[in-house]
Image (cartoon, rainbow, N blue to C red; front, side, top):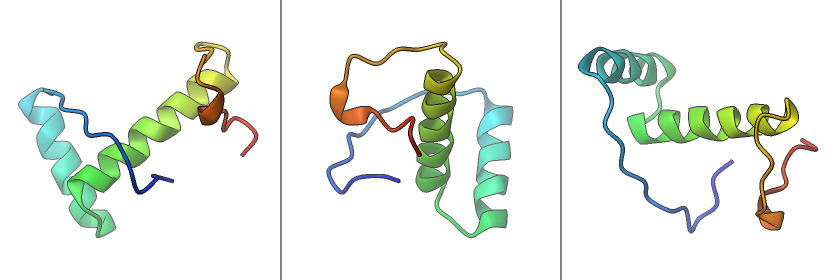
Length: 65
């Protein structure tokens, strides 16, 4: 999933979303950061597959997985 040199991104989310994400991460036994990275990565992959987003980043062509 994530590469060892992952870029840090900071985002603000509504309190209710933050609470849900914290609860979800605890239920899965993973860190909040790891869950959010997983969700974002999968959302980007899905957008690429569905044609919602075309990446100009050749290194990030992971639509074949």
